[in-house]
Amino acid sequence: MLATMENLALLDMSDDLASMILASAEADRYRECLHQMTTNLLTQQRIKRLAKIKEQYDEVQRFGRYHPDYKEVNRLARQYKRDVDMDDHVAAFRQAEMDLQSLLDEISFILADAVSENIKVPTGNPFFETKSSCSTGGCGSGGGCGCSA
Image (spheres, one colour):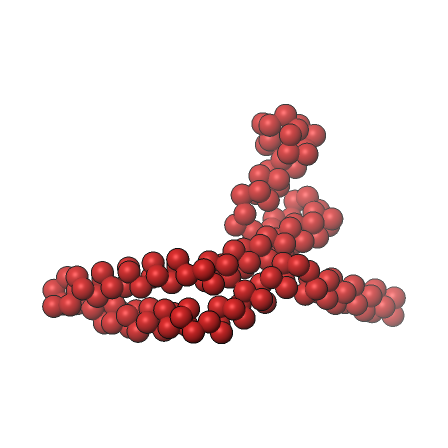
């Protein structure tokens, strides 16, 4: 009975944490950028144009450089990809996405570290990888990162 109550308390706390994340500035910015990206007509035209050329690109790749449209489709695919990448709404969305991911990575790292410093958290973020290696004594910065090297 006690374990069940502890599990319920943990579930309640995890719901509270999820609510705090959803109310965070990072999540607000993510939602706002997603809305702007999906409602901007020019941005959506660029994304749809890229999706169409990707279909052609996949078809051309089956035959490789022997396909008559190989060079042109490859050129257009690169150009349309660059157009999407340089779109202000897409760039803002990607930055907001990275910011939210960093917040989630940091929370995961804190939770894992609270349980044991031996728990590995795959974040893809070099900051956390360096931080986790510091806890094992691998830091050569003399404690500048916060470890006790």
